Length: 286
Image (cartoon, rainbow, N blue to C red; front, side):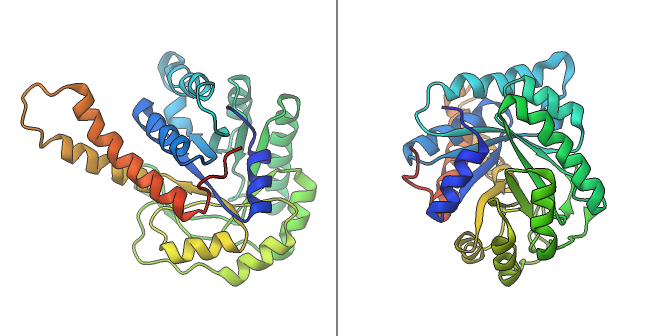
């Protein structure tokens, strides 16, 4: 069943667990995430990115957003359909028209007042749709999707959090405490003391981006100290590639599609199960 980010994260904050947020592309990823979450009775957030949606002839919207909306009616767990990392209000509005229950507006590289203005505009757009909005304060750096450019982290300042939330009306806030997008060049060291201050200051649940590759003990510490949403994409891509490598070893010259896709889906499902268990969200579906 589709629900909002606000409802899912409010329950997570109260219950002191975290909900996995997985970027999905194509049906094998969507199916692996949803079937695993249902088996573990865990709420889940399915995220979609602009490059996978804005394709020729609207195929990205039809095949990706359309698939999630249809599949969500079949599953008996809370599912959030979330637009990830948008910085354009036109894209936000298009996602809302397509039935997204949550959107993320990323003004994290803008000055504070400009970030507030952009985020508030997204909240105003989402209001009539009863959709949730996630903003970002501070900036989670790392590699871009093309793996060509690297951005530096800007840690979130605790004294800005309450003001940002109150001025924008966001339902969730992504913060920067030391994670990064992409594959880590060195093991990160999350600033848990800063996270405690951010959580104390924030009226809304906190999200952490760049969750892939972060050591499990640090992830658990982050969840125990206020992180309610963890974004995962790089670990999915690594699992996807492992599945492709296994499929390439199939000896049959004309392998059945279920065997080829089955190896990929199996690697993805194992990774998703590991993350759901790590985040203490097993059995938290309602």
